[in-house]
Image (cartoon, rainbow, N blue to C red):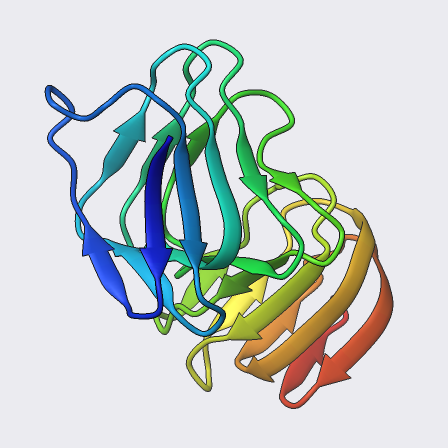
Length: 173
């Protein structure tokens, strides 16, 4: 595996002609992150991307993990962070969001449609004060929806969440 570990924030950009084809593991100390600096592709057969701890921040860049049987796995206690405009290209039913995992949206543009990931666990919105994040489909297994800053819109879809922490705006339509 190719590990990205440690207790500091780091950045990553890839040269796909030289990058190893083994699994990629983000295991940062809690509170620290690995941020992408360019669109990134891990497309080798069986090449998984696993976030075991800390944060993987796409930071506005696209991510592709779609080699044969490749997976994106977000473990409990770890965070997958997006602005909202990125394209995430993955195999069917990916990413795998483990119980206790978090997906955070932090974009500050006018509006975003959150990704149609299956089974969000902890979904966190920390966008701009007037930024609208809209659901693309029904979500029925959210453990906790946290709206810190920004506007979260159901967009006519159904949201089932065990816990709602709302410090800004939840639009029901």
